[in-house]
Length: 398
Picture 1 (cartoon, rainbow, N blue to C red):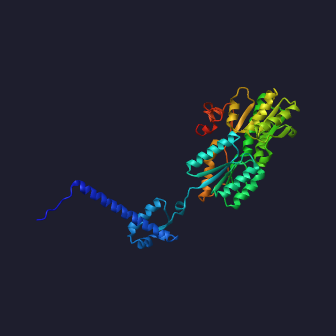
Picture 2: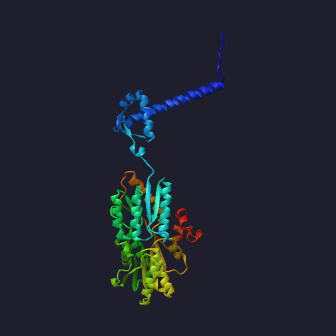
Picture 3: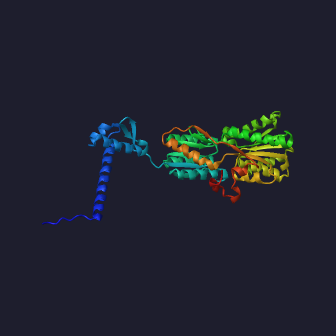
């Protein structure tokens, strides 16, 4: 009589594992057959048609279809009607171009670091070029982005005169654009609510004038940046409106627009010249950004006339926050733009645009006034930073 070998427990478990593996493979193959139906036809398919083509029962075909919808490879168009989820299947790793304003200013460095971080977190590629605060360089950078075939450009440059040229270059190449701070034709705008920021600054300046000078002043100096155009300049017209709200009866001839070029040294020299020919003892001053205002305050300090002025600025940069904490400073406040938060908002707009959603044409920063009393609540960890470490604020600010 021929003996029969019975498998031991170990062999039995192995056979079951193999059987399960074979079953799983058949399931995967059936799923692949279902997907092949869709790749051979871009039209939506019904459950009965899919079951027939794949030689499956309707319950089995239905289970596979539900799983593919859950995995975002198929979309359910109607009852028992399905199509490929093209948004998922065609998704690629987008490549963005970012033209930074300049590495000269801590504000623009913070914007750049924020965009780099948010781009990395979103799993996107980023080509970074610097506009170097130059109109010609910004135009050349736009041409580079076209040659590099980037999917979207984030443009941060200051000169209104080059905005239309840059926009035309990118539009002709069908590259969508997000413009930071300076509007560009056809681009999505992200940046300051300029008049609103100016109102906040003007009210703070007027309040200081009321508290210390009984609401009386002789001059209102506005450090301008003409090349940026009328939109950023509305920070300064907003400042005038804010002062007039609280101090309504003063003459318009007291207002002086002075070109500080948005820079510390240029503003320092411009206010030095002004003070040499002006002996006023009660001067209110507003800068279009922090560097211009801080340069102007340095000119007052050099001349021994710090007591003759009160000032407000815009951006809320690290340098302005340090000045607010300085004993005896005449800086009343800086309107915060929170550049460390730009990246998250801008990359969200970029993804909406690239993935076929329609983002708003304009999105604005929510401004808050930083003062001696509030600066520590907004930036409690400034004291832990060495000068130049502003990039670390991405992880330390409120």
